Length: 264
Length: 356
Picture (cartoon, each protein chain N blue to C red):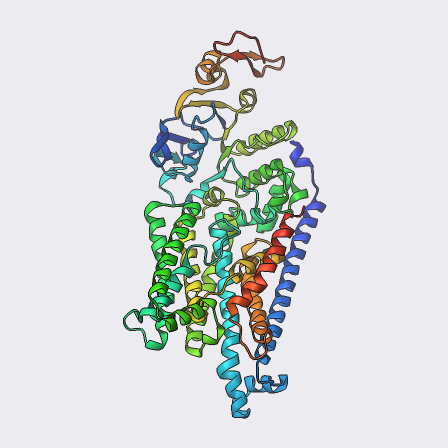
């Protein structure tokens, strides 16, 4: 096992009186890779991400850079990972730039550049310089999501965990965000991204992890993890997995299992 | 190259940084204005009172008490200055506590009294006033204040132990606080039921809040508490700013949210308990101070926390002057005046918030 790999084994987590994910073990995730976490609602995708990030108490092992993330203090863990939660608070009177500055002050910065320069550089990278001085309370859902992504990458953590980072974005911005994530992991980093759109996940991820009912259902390259049989058992749908003219995997859903009508 | 990387140029970067620096400069100017306004209001408050003392004599008595006529020096140093200093310290302490409370509970309607602290303090004071019961070792003239402080502080410690034991979040903490509020209110009602006419009157007067209870030893105690708490509060400013981005976000940035909340509750309880021990119940300052500061300097807690403290001190100092001026010859309890001023301010803030 290389120190740059992320190894998740026997990871269980949940809420008082209710286990959501049980003994999840994944094949080592190599640096430079994007892993997409997919599955139906309440499959445990967000819980898995929250458990890895340390915001939810968990048992098991999450080994990265020679350390077990679950045993680290919040500050030491923050140096290794950036987590973008699904929900971004709507009412914060902070400006987007102030949010970035607080991330750098609290989590610590690895760069010698002045903190404000680092913050503005990332805002520029994410394309939200125009809203830098606007308060969160005045932003649209999509703008808040982009600001939240900027907060997650501003400290340049080697492990990036994104929970549905494109759910509030238009098609163009979805594309931009995933381009950014790919460029980010190219510098020997790892990203795990929760996504709902399977075609989108197949296009952008090196590996797909399919979850249902808190358990691992399939994992591997898109071709092996997204198959009609797996989609039928996990989502309860009849679907075709085909390649488009440019070779990308496309998932076409024909209907629910047991429903004889074609398409939607 | 992604579309993101081509949107802005170096000119835009420079412009944003310059705009942010202008914003910081504007906030510093606002602070200077607030400090000046507080100094003016403080002087006006000291000059206000039944004995019509000219400004010159008042300033002279403050600066050179030995050289001033004895009656003037006595009025200024034994009556007016303690009240005015109490207004500043209590306003500052309660508004700072309110600002921290609103952030750690993620609730703009929270105030230092949200978690039942005031009810606990009133119960402590009622025990001393009605039954003469106090903690051993506390001198007789500190009995009411001491009981109010210890019960208020004790109630917060009880809440904190429950939070630590059960790992409760902000919402559960508020519910526990409400339970404490009703419990102590019921106990106070029981004491009122058995109290003599005279004790009942004393208790009612205590709950209205009055700056005239302030004396130098008690002021020194409150000043000590405030000066110990402020540096710790300021040291937590960035973490509290991060908390405004959401609990999970702050946690993933490296903030130990549980520890931050507990430390903040200790600071809030110390500030609130000492303020209540000095003057009784003074409402609205802890709610209105942070809201006004939020409108003036935003939610970067490096500015929001001291801004709230300054706004609170200013509000209570103005309320103190009004309490002496409203009805000539009568000192209206500060709790009534601060509520009378705070309510319209609060309504205006709510209405402004509703605007697009």
